[in-house]
Length: 574
Image 1: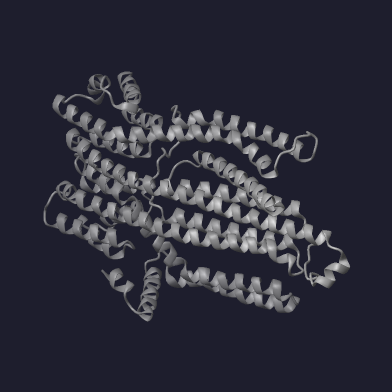
Image 2: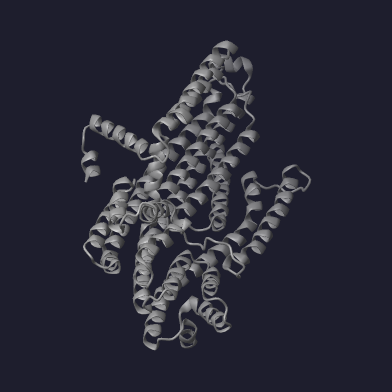
């Protein structure tokens, strides 16, 4: 509630709130504030003054001294606010993984293990990061300090950095202290927590829309600056290559900044299986395609180079010649996209599979292997072959947990990996299969609904990136053609006639049009690479699948560049 009031408060109150949050971060650090002051802040202050002294003693020029002093000042700022940044990072980790954590703790609460063992098991899950750390603190309070579970939850609720976890632990402490079963409380919490997760997920997608609008304005502004940098040296005597190169560097920094921001803002929802295994997963089919794609690109790159230097007598526009070597990369990108599509299809089938598995196991009171003997004949779409392989492993008496992990690895799915592990662990610890299947199925179904909304946001972003790329390249090469025309005009003018006409202010001698064209082509490649990474950050797919967008963006840019050059030259000649 405080965050809602803070957003409407005056700036001085927001400043005080920020100061209080920084102080609270210092108090909640694992190390003491005094030790942090001596280890981090004092050295950064000494470094800052050292940069000032070094600049004065060595007599450094202002162009070198100013950045050096600013780096020292940045070191102080980072050292001072680092505890706050670390606290925010932990809060984010809790928020991103809380729905998986809640499903996991609910599944464990339905088993026959001791309730403290539930939290001890979760503390060993490294993937939960800050949540696992908090569970470790809670278990330490029970084991080392002989606190009751409700008292331990209440104490940790006051010390944790996440309001979400604070609220959960307070309600859990009240429930445990009141004598209610943890499993009953957690089952009741499922709908509420999942709804909160959906709300936060949709809020992050809304932030992506804001980022998209900001990206459009910034990129169009950067494109205008680059066009201005192409044209202005003909009026003002300065090096066009240095000015254009510096502008391209600024353009690249802006794009990298947006890529990082989108990676931070986009919801944490991985698609691919995380851990490596000896099983034959979807990724095992990609290296061969990647070798073919990269090898083909290298061959075509050598051919394009031979054409560019005149060894092969072929007349081809430079933008098209630069785009040709990227074409073979379509193959590994397309293969990865096909595998990702299969993974998404398997994800959509898993809720019905685990629900059916739990229901039949509960009725028959049989092992998973016996139940799969009948289920493997049913149609689970893309998951059918994986279910059949799981049955065969279990029928061969391969360890159940290892069989399920190989099953998850072969599907390539992160969700199947997590929820499959939860189901088999809950089953081995005596949980009711029907209840386990229903909880897991309901949670994954909700995640899949949110993924559909994410896919729509990604599709919109793709359209925006392609549109921006087309407009920027058009503007770049319009500027290049204008400069080329002005260079030709000044070259054809008679010196005396030019002075008489008052055109001696034009400065075209320093222009190397071929170098400028190469710089613009480099900008095309930079834009295509970063744009494809932004798309992958948005949908959390594999970076290799972004090669498709990289190739398309390069080719679209090359074609637009050639068309722009042709149309402008045609119009001017008329």
